[in-house]
Image (cartoon, rainbow, N blue to C red; front, side, top):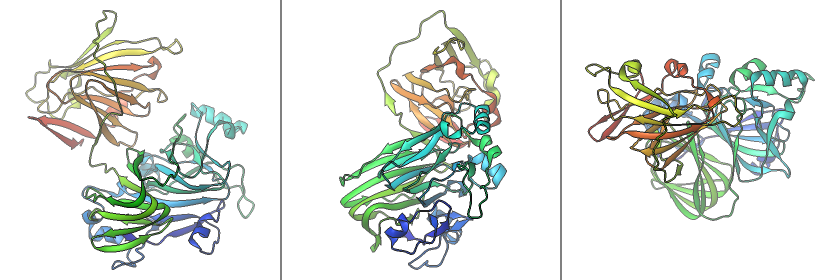
Length: 498
């Protein structure tokens, strides 16, 4: 099956601009949003041409799930693409994560990224704030000083802004952007500049729910990709939920098949001709197509910029290469360090099967200088050693923890042995980075983390963190990491945590 074209679906908004209507040479009637690809109940894409014309994407999925979405891809892994055309600023809003949305809205959580196609001179958007607590937010609401705390980012064509769930954000006036995000339509309006609707009424706000889901201090990330008409492929977004690759084509490019899952393909500059399985179709500026998992490789011809959105199914654990490397081979040897040992009997409930294993088996030990949380700028440092004592083939691991203060980050450096650093966000998305001598890992305070020894030698990892971070082990017990890692012989096996 080749690329699937669908019809845009337009929504009227109070902040709408007409940039997109002019590009598409259509009559504008106050529409600010154009849903380009969606299977959300609010707006379900309909195939616009070919043998499936008139069918919804949902019906195609129901008929051939694995061929359309990919094996193991579920509703919560789906993506949506939409244009936002803003003459005026959008309200400052926040989206919930997956767990909160499912429990409170019968919807999915929303993480998104914006690609800027056009921006008036001096245009900017909101992506984050400097609030450090919900009490501080409430005090600012009472004082009417919300705007003083917002993090504004100037943008121009070619900029990409990443907006994880929980981030206060607002697209600014004079901006046309393509939003690629998760399968959700839940938005909590936090602040609206005291703006009134067409009937003169203040628009309703969702303060209580906003305070429930906002991540204090979290800001969006801007990546600038100026258009230079030089061929390139660059990963612009790498969320736990999905990735977005930018592809600049100047002549011809072959987009490989990707049978693991569906993808979205959007043209945000120029135009292209797509050839797949002997059939040719045009992809115009601002047009998007849905690429089913069964789609073969695609030959792209033209002078254009494409964005490819690819989900990361929750049923498959993502194991990445570490982002940084360094030559780090020193060992710890200080008698002043505190010393703790964890045996199987201490954390037996964390493992799948401990039958027949000596409960006195030593799994790991930690040596550290705990620092002084009362001293500003104080740092803690330590060395964790995880022994290669597998528990009925399950690889040994540390308990894992969140930080009590999620604004505090941490750095790990691999010193000896091989293993994995497992991460988990608040929606239960779980992934890993490889750990080995010289690997460096920058851990966000909003992520739970655990070390796993997958080798035959002790895994040694150094860590540096502010002592004010604190350790929250209870939350990991209540919401365990999403996967278990086993080793049989030289083969690793990863299974979902039941």
